Image (cartoon, rainbow, N blue to C red; front, side, top):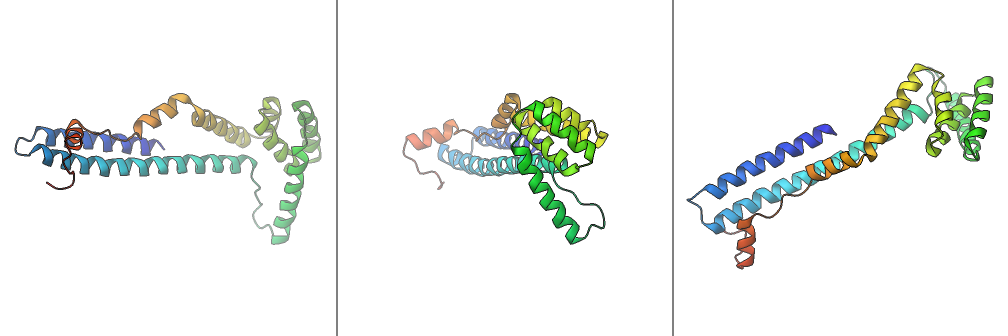
Length: 198
């Protein structure tokens, strides 16, 4: 994602440099300048749009992966297809059960029972519900099981904070914004000159 933003910055910088060279070229007519600038701007804006789409896709994929790492269903090495199917059914039922939890106190009670009985699917389902509802005590209780779970939880929380950060959104908006029409293009357009033929 940062790579997309740095690529966008480099694209903008290169386009600005090319446009300034064209603007200062005394051998070109105003129409020729407008045409060449329009070509650079159109190409750069297309590339910026592609980078923006790639950035949004990468963020969505990263968020999905972090959710899967923490709340997804995993299988032990050597699990048979029957074992996998059974685990899927158990987890599905656990998710339905967790969806009916009304508040954090109930989540903590049920999580304690799930941990006491070794019901990993139910504990994970309760954690997923707690994450959706913002029940931090229940999430912390779930995360206390292992350092790996704590690490995945921190990573997901940090990513979600960055994902919704207004500062980051503004930075992305600026980075991927389209290059505006230049004075040369505006003048050619207003005078009725056709851009595209020198």
